[in-house]
Length: 143
Image 1: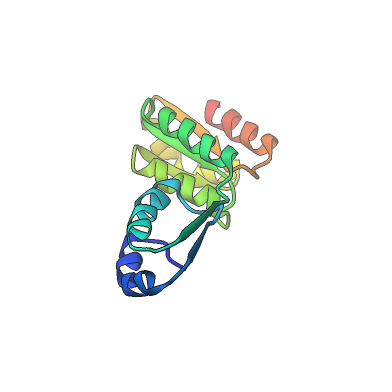
Image 2: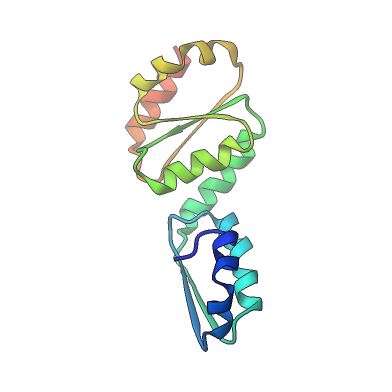
């Protein structure tokens, strides 16, 4: 399994020697990561077949959240910390603005000081996060 540009270069001789290479992009993989890795492998392989399993809904949510993150002082990502998709979403957004990743509205209590000093807060969630949990978080922020 290769999940970084460094890992590609560490395995470049194996890639060059292989007659055929198949790549399956996991649904949990960051699309930006895949965009960096794929051209290097393609350039160094004889025959390459790629199957992208990145969920279009997840990709769209990431793009929309990135736009929102540029307009706010804090992003709140709601969803399981065991979810790779949700964790990736939080990581992507943290590169744009201050971001916290919570699983439930009660965790907002850990960030009371931070919430009191920001004026614009964006909320997004992982694909498997129930809507009622998202609404509870939004309501609690509004209180």
